[in-house]
Length: 318
Image 1: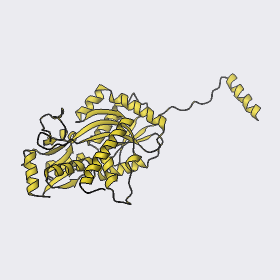
Image 2 (image 1 turned 60 degrees about the vertical axis):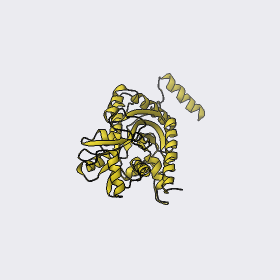
Image 3 (image 1 turned 180 degrees about the vertical axis):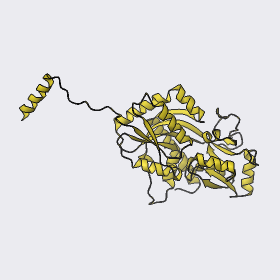
Image 4 (image 1 turned 135 degrees about the vertical axis):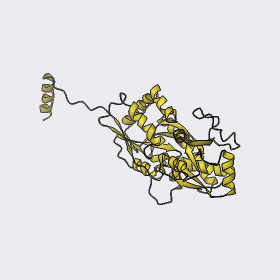
């Protein structure tokens, strides 16, 4: 039998026949899960990837939505997705470290370590904003009112246990003010609530502020004036030493194929180096901030330590 198989192989070679080559990755479209509603910073940054990956990745990037619970629905789905090399997801820091820390014991949900970092894409500092129609003209006016009326000032966020929520807690800690949080499933829902007067202020991402006509920035959580909105004073200028931001990137399910990971990391590095892509990122109020998977993993570790420290001070974790 062995001689017969060898003879067949030799015959095929003589006739010029070849065995079918192994198909090159990727063979089909790549799904990019967005954990928030369409129209927010996560969605817009993913749409830019979808657009500028054409010509670099031979298969299309297909954005899909699994929004709700401040991103937890989507990230739980991603952690359990099939690791076939064709499913990735957007992740936001510090959201992905906060939620597992504060989830009630026994409640199902993802663990941070199940979301394997692929790359960091953009940087998005936190900012406190109000409607231009608001009676609060400054950060100090808003804080003084919130301190004099504990729990009466309604503050929008993009969900409990998110970066917005952590930002709110930090400001409460530093100022002694007390807000009532009103969580929304994304910036595309929170911003209209602010403008309609449904809430009094919004602990927001700067990208959401820059895309919201009719809003006024009271204070931004950067060390220096931010290049995309230099007229907004920093919290440090106003007596609150706080730097707070979101890092938005990509992650994979556990056990993702190493070859696919290496391919996508290199491909997205090329996308993010494109000046037109970078201009698009700035155009939606974000700063390009590409970091490879290893570096992004270190950022996640540092943000987890910072978040744990804040939550411990609040008495929310041990």
